[in-house]
Picture (cartoon, helix red, strand yellow):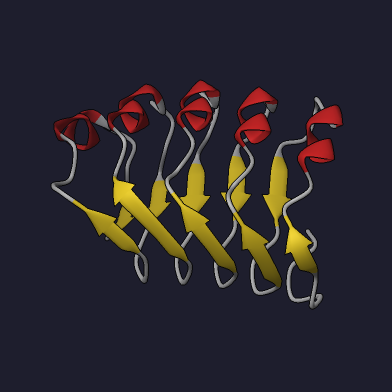
Length: 122
């Protein structure tokens, strides 16, 4: 958990070297740029929190590989584009927090097949 540490710059793609990482909390920093697609290689990741940064761009399609993900929180950024339908692959997802961004389009139908989803903030 590296949250609330005034970290700046881009999200380090070198985090992918931590193959057994289950929790990554980088919320409430000043990270900028795009979410690195390399985070999709962290197959053990269960919790990803990037809230309250200055991230922009779309959610990378490689995040669809995070099939063990239980919580994704990216609120309070400048993310845009459609909410991806690959979230349907996250069958263990219980928390999905997307508020405070610039997403467009409809909520994917795959969202409604997530039987473990308890919190949905869009």
